[in-house]
Length: 260
Image (cartoon, rainbow, N blue to C red; front, side):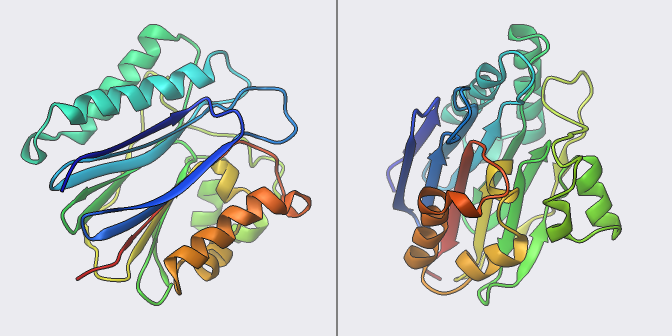
């Protein structure tokens, strides 16, 4: 299998596509906010080698200087690291720490989220800092894992004080406790999971997860045709702005295992 690299940053309008890598089908979507004057602060990346890949998003924090540059720096750090490593040599916690050091060194007072999946043949593990989210589905569309957005609202949902749908309209939805750019990081790491045929993974910035509930995502992309589900989710953001809860930059990668 040839290597595959995608690195999308500072997108003026939108980009989307579907491709295959090994036993997986992958779709990606990135779109600039519709009404804000700011540039797109999301970075979306996929880097696949013969037997492993990393895929995810970084979302520069609005309200702080150089959020766009911070998300780019994180994506570039990941790319340069993975290009030089064999699967057995990859150390992802150290990689996140290196990315954080570079953000702090180059862009003081800049912050960004990071969420990505690391897939070694059929074994997946995900990592996150901030409020970008990761959702796993089994072959029937049931959600089997969500990371916890590192925010007051995210922790309130996890504690059972509010539903995930109620959280989308909460006044403190925009607050985030923990971001790359902080001196000390809290890194959420999931245990390993074996992806079976039909299992799917969705990684996205808050522009996705602030507008669509986990239950709706399960219905749209967790089951049924990969292509139809991906197209439906993309069309929601390209054709139905009147139904959004929040106008924001939107980026996501959707992956499904299509062969045993």
